[in-house]
Amino acid sequence: MTQIKADALAGHIAKGLKAVYTIHGDEPLLAQEAADALRAAARQQGYSERQVFIVSGAHFDWGPVIAASQAMSLFAERQLIEIRIPNGKPGKDGSDALQRYCQGLPPDVLTLVTLPRLDKTQLSSAWFTALDTAGVSVRVDPVERRELPAWIARRLQQQGQPVAAGPEGQQALEFFADRVEGNLLAAHQELQKLALLHPPGELSLQQIEAAVLDVARFDVFKLSEALLSGKVARVLRMLEGLKAEGEAAVLVHWTMAEDIRALKRVHDAVAAGKPLPMALREARVWGPKERLFERLVPQLGGAALSRLLVAAQVCDGIVKGLRHPDWPTDAWDALGRLALMLEQALRPSAPKTRYG
Image (cartoon, rainbow, N blue to C red):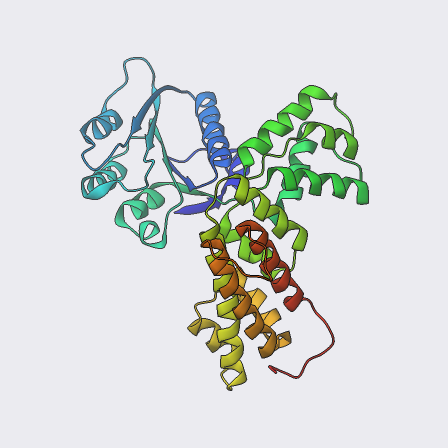
């Protein structure tokens, strides 16, 4: 049983291929690149015949898949069998079939299984355990915003177009990342465009600004992390992007209001004497947001949070079509104002009375 991340696959392949590879994750570009790397390695090692099976629903016939793995090829000594499960759910028959499949694999068959992102239940299922035990599982993680400039820099370096060292180069990478955030396939296309437009050599900020289109896509649930991190410019840019993509203002407001309510619940619990870790668990705050809360809660005042709750209620009415004399009438303008109010409340200032 071997589990690796996608960026470790090249080094793994260099040491030799295993019988089964299971690629799972929700970043299409990186999953495609991992699968392409395995196909190329398979061709180099004599797996010249390839069969592809796409599992389409619970009534998929697994018989041909099992038969293909056991049949002697008429045209090649080795064959590559690809099993694609787009919804990540093979069903009961598929679970049984995959377990049987892994038990009887001949040495001249290489299997590539591709799946979307899997939840904890799927990762601990009998069928995934069978695949994992029979070979290697390759986890494809998304490239988060904080990792994106370094990812872009590596890709530019690979195509012989590094950015300048120092602040100008970092500014160019940040500009690039802002334009392609949440859309790695488009980021790849923009990188290819730069390779076509400019010869190998160092790229300037001006060249990148002139070439890279704004193709960012934003996830409403990433908005809260940006809000709690105090990244005002990014938050306002995300709001503009979500509006342009047709996201519902009601959902965006719910995300922001839920953060405010959670901050108030945790603050009040700690002020009442409850340990912060316990207050966070009871408020169902975990992951990256947990670390942000640990930093923010001690510096927040109860009065400021109460004012934010009132503001969130006013904003709720505006996104549902009501009006308020002191607020913008446009829902997205109101969301921007609420974001700025939250950022101002979270901004570090002079020391406050603890949990005041």
